[in-house]
Length: 361
Image (cartoon, rainbow, N blue to C red; front, top):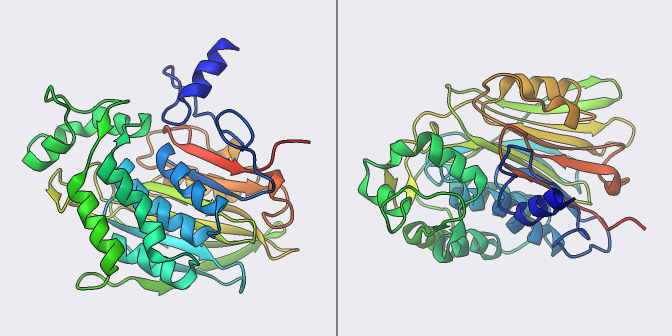
């Protein structure tokens, strides 16, 4: 019990030191306030980005708003795998029309434009409101989470050659940042401020909206989009809202920490790895029953998609997949009974999954 309590206190930024998977809290437990009703699901490879996006779902935002916040926040809190110099794909299900399509921004440097396109088409909150959380994180600092510290420990040598990157990712003793240190990114904050004020226009890659593949099996329809690419690492996340909106995204800057060179506060990218996303629809109700996304974890993604429900049993660690799978699944569907849904962060990382449900009773 004491060990559980110790893990619980650390859960917002890391897993326990012996490698146990991160604790997943429901609202009404631990440090999180109770929710009067189901408000959504989130899962990603970094906890602070998930918590920032959860505030959007607890307010008046929908899945597209929360996904935009999460994607931009990951550029700050997990810069080794996501960033303005990178790209990715997002599969989106609109709650009102039930239409599902993918926004493809795999061209490197298209990151901001990709999330701007997602938000412009499906978001309901003002653009400035969904950019501000990432901007504030970059300007005032975030605590280095277990997820980021794992990347720094494994691949931080890529940051030493570039003076700008070395300054950002080292402490006063000129050592690479470790879990619990404060990460400040003022140049990235300035870039995000320009994005907030001016939008994502100008020159650069233009995102494309694409039709996903569809197939029916065992009472569900699997809607998926595969973004082919080279070998590499990235990150993924999923969001679901109580109205039936769903977003699943895979993003990357290529290799972990990209080229190791900072430009405008963001690490420049290498080649784009394969990214995949899927939304599983209940054939009886036509509402989402599961969502999955990855940037690189082909084997686990394929297995999880084949047996998407229950999801948790399929996300086992078996082999050296470069990427990770994150997802959520429901016993029926997210709109019919969200309280029976669960979100799952890949056990290979130190991410965070959050079900915004009311306490039992």
